[in-house]
Image (tube, rainbow, N blue to C red; front, side, top):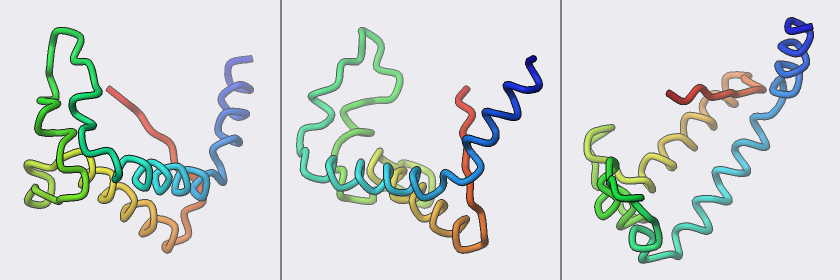
Length: 98
């Protein structure tokens, strides 16, 4: 039963790269107009991401490659990765968070 569920879940991801790319593009387009994004987020008492920096200046790429990036730069880098993967024939993408 577990193996069947795994196969069904994999099938759902098989051709999702266009949906993921559309979602990332939509997120970038919507967040680019929110100047005070960092002040709209709650740190729940523990600001592990340094919200003031990471979620500010969404339209600016402050980092050097992957060091010092903000959320906007990370999303744009992720979009470039998805576009590259698609250009090489990838049709599906999935994520592990940890």
